[in-house]
Amino acid sequence: MKGYQVGRKPKVDPDQTRKFSGILMLSAWGFAMVVSSFLFLYIGYLVDEILGTTPNFMLCSFFLAIGLCVWKLYSEAKDRGKKM
Image (spheres, rainbow, N blue to C red):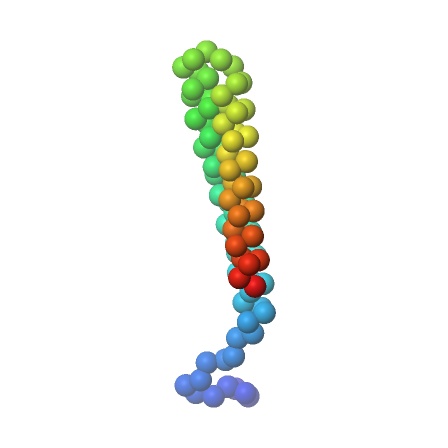
């Protein structure tokens, strides 16, 4: 147990923590993008079935979900850039 002292926590490198938080942020946004796009795609499909319009609402809601996710990702990245 060389270099380890009882009762003391090992030092954490802040740069490494920032890298991991960036990776976690991107993976969370990727997951949110996939889930929201499929959710909006399904809701658009249901609306198309009710109204009898084949791909109109499905495609519009899909692109709306993608656009909103990209916009929120951009705004969060811009806010993080201001904090650095």
